[in-house]
Length: 247
Image 1 (cartoon, rainbow, N blue to C red):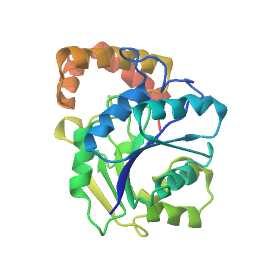
Image 2: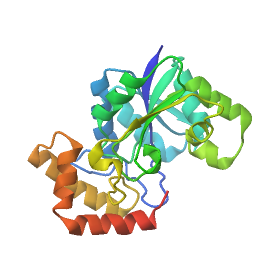
Image 3: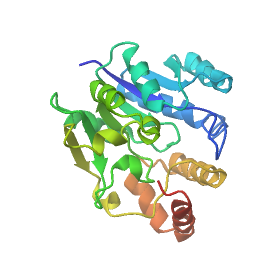
Image 4: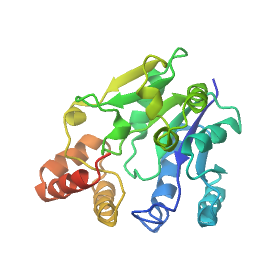
């Protein structure tokens, strides 16, 4: 089973253009931080970006970091993702979103440990039944079989499913073999934590928290959550942005 990590990344975000490359921590952008983090899995890494000229900078960053870059459709993200995987005929991939600077490699390893040949999809799920990728946590990735995504391409042209790569898979358990992992107890029933970047306010908040993470040497996400619980002003801002950016 050939496995890789694919990071979806583009500079042309409508709400916050350039968010993945603008200086985030020690002059490094979020995408650069993520690339270096997922390299810890010791798997091939592909950044799947668009063919637009604005994303030339993404390709240049990939060259600098010595990872592969695939460029495809901006609108049909599913097609771009599948083609990126098929460049080297990968069977299964970890899917990572480039707006999550607090991505946990430990949780990615949990996915890999749970994977079986009979499965099409593995992901964490919260206590309310929400897939991790539809929460605002930003700590999680997902694993998916590429043949399952090719099947999605063959059965639907719905723009929703072409933009959101895995939604069709986990919304159709009758068609695909799914396996859900429980989120850790300290997150399972939380709906007030937002650690992803969509807006300028998100970016500034995540910058501050990331600086704290490095200074405090937090080794796990529960330490971060304890800190947040002791700083309600941060949680209040997160709740406001969750309401404004509900997925």
